[in-house]
Amino acid sequence: EPEVTQTPSHQVTQMGQEVILRCVPISNHLYFYWYRQILGQKVEFLVSFYNNEISEKSEIFDDQFSVERPDGSNFTLKIRSTKLEDSAMYFCASSEAGVRETQYFGPGTRLLVL
Amino acid sequence: LAKTTQPISMDSYEGQEVNITCSHNNIATNDYITWYQQFPSQGPRFIIQGYKTKVTNEVASLFIPADRKSSTLSLPRVSLSDTAVYYCLVARHSGGGADGLTFGKGTHLIIQP
Image 1 (spheres, chains in turn purple, green):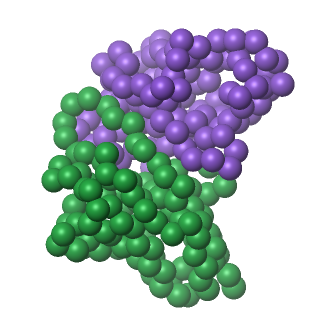
Image 2 (image 1 turned 120 degrees about the vertical axis):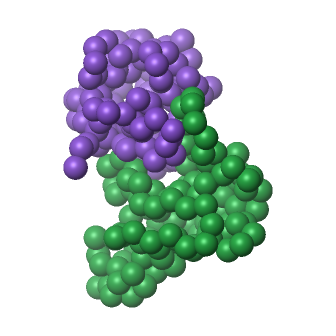
Image 3 (image 1 turned 90 degrees about the horizontal axis):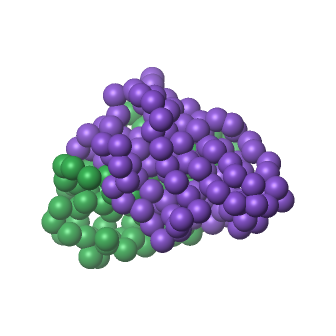
């Protein structure tokens, strides 16, 4: 069964550094998403991406964040100047056209900002 | 988006049938009901989706009454590995765009031997 993959599985960084989280969505999917989950809290939507542009973003997704699909397979989340409160699990998800509720999530990247 | 309410936690035993009910009083005509499962340190996993009446797949059944103001996820003959958080979501189902999902706190299901 096709899966969403994410790298790295864990990332430790110093406050103020930039990090790039990578995702490979399911190959025939056209909609891509990033979510985060702070330890013990809810899964929170960050941003969705379709047709090479941001489709929707939450209040969390401020100028510190950016997304990119640099090639035909990868989907990245960049966090500039990380803060302690950015420590969380970051999940990538993808969905087929027209079935956007059925989102398939990756295993996540655990980000720890020190 | 319709607000959903579900129990914070439930306990059951291996081999039992577990029913988790979710209320969504403000569900709109275009909204579908979707359930996800999440194990610790893993991403949510789609379980089942429905609009009305009953939907069944290899994992679960979803019962939706005629007024659609609630739904019940039914897990037959649970095992220890079904211990997870279960999320009920209500989302618009229409073509185009890419809406993010809104997760609540979910129901933490604990299965005991």
